Amino acid sequence: MRVTSSRIVLSRTAATLGLAMLVIATGCRSAEGGKKMTIQISSSAFAQGKPIPKKYTGEGIDVSPALAWSGLPEKTKELVLICDDPDAPRPEPWVHWVIYKIPATVTGLPEGVPRKPQLKDPPGTLQGLNSWPAAEAIGYRGPMPPPGHGVHHYYFRLYALDAPIEAEPGLDKKAVLAKIRGHILAEGVLMGTYERKR
Image (cartoon, rainbow, N blue to C red; front, side, top):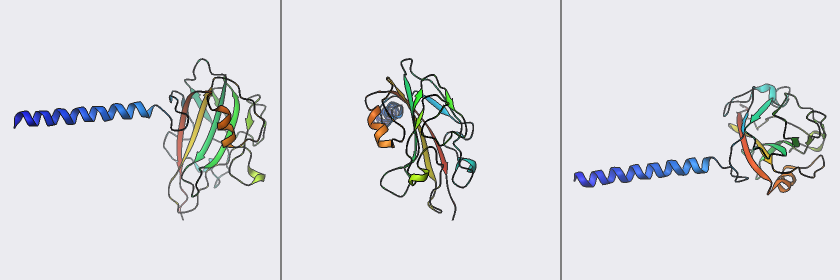
């Protein structure tokens, strides 16, 4: 009986270690690009996994939060940032921000990025379409989930590219992801939450 118990304990220990290694191995890769999540992205407005303040939502003044990042690969030539909400009650995630052709030398974005197709700062940076109607479709639009729909999760995903992309302003998320396919060196993600009560 003692031998059998020892074997059971050892077997369970091995299984636990194997599961932990699997979690670690898969946890460092993104579902979308399949690249290592080596970029650290943060915001002075909210911490990873914490609520996004009302200021940065459709219930507030709806400005983009300040973002900062580090850990870019040495061969990074350009950056892309996409923010979306997979909890939206529709088949595709609701897109809140598409911003691309960010220079590799940039280490963050300030609060309140203007809603313009082409930015002067960072120079050469372009913005694409979010999921709002045409008149509001360029630049950042903050969380505004349906009242009583529960907590929504907002993913600010940064992509480091090995080459600049050829693109014009006003592309949607799908078009940008198609252009960067095969050029992603690394990724990073910052997730914030928001809920509208009934």
